[in-house]
Amino acid sequence: MKKFIALLLAMVMVFALCACGNDDAKDNDGDQVKDYSSMTLDELKAELKTVEDGKLTVATSPDFAPYEFYSLDANGDATLAGFDIAFAQYIADKLGLELNIITMDFDGTLAELQAKNVDIGMAGYSPDPKRESIMSFTKIYYKGGQSFVTSKAKADEITSLETANNAKYKIGAQTGSIQYDLAEANTPDADNIGLTKVPDIIAEVISGKLDGAFMETIVAKAYQAQYEDLVIVCDVPYEQEGSAIGVNKDNEVLLAALNLIIDEAINDGSLQKFVDEAGILAVGDKYEGLLDDAGNVPEADAPADDTAA
Ligand code: ARG
Image (cartoon, rainbow, N blue to C red; front, side, top):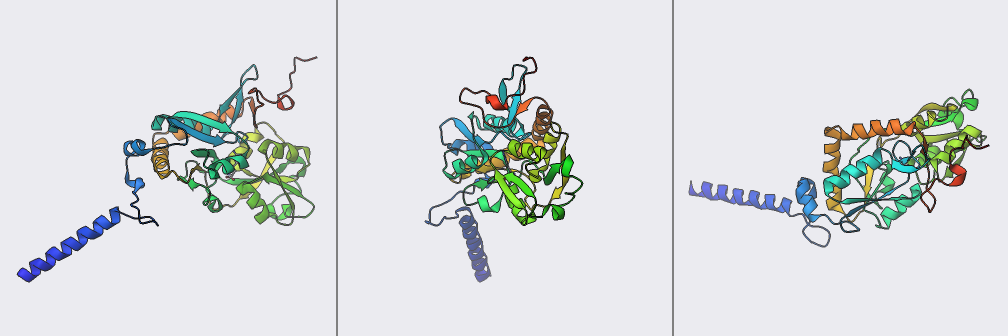
């Protein structure tokens, strides 16, 4: 009996040791690493550090309504809008930080995250596994799909990805985006062209300079409100169906906090509200691109002034 009890005690000790071992995971240098994913938001906030103290620094590329764009008031003054922007404010509030959004071209947002100059990138990122070496991804906060678009003038001849995959066609996609990869995968025989700004791609599809383009479905739908000649030809299959936040690779505390905040924003209905509100703003007067140094819509892109003689 004594032997049995001794054995039992020994087993209990081994179990206890194993349990401790799990808590004290070690990284490559043998340092203790914490399991941030099991911590509460308050615990994470107590440990949170950001690139600039007291601020949440966010990179975005405002050429992507309804994710991010400029909404124009009656005077033509531009305000940054979109569901990424509203969600960024919600996140900053939950973290007790001041929101600092920096606007740039899409490929710039990737570079700034890689250089660790910003805390997060919110630019409708697809969690592309190829990007995992330069950023961490949160869970998906918005589920969306991909589309192939053309103009009304070409919709009779370009009816599928198969018909679009022809050397005589020029197909557009945003530089550095997963849509560019989709172009190379689905229309490899066509002349695939990368452009920096989404509105330029749309303008060229409408003018006939491009024959088609790969685009996020919700973005294509937002453009259809503005250009009735834009036709969505078909859905484009893509494994990562949805958007995630890109996080500075050094910041595991922030990553864990964002995953908690995403759950909360989905469950309390805030995210759906941000998407709905952005959808309404996106059909109104808007500008997609970067402002000039004075914070105005660049002259050439300003909506035509019909009061002018
Ligand atoms: N979802 C695509 C990607 O991650 C395109 C995102 C483009 N975003 C933007 N703000 N222009 O590659």
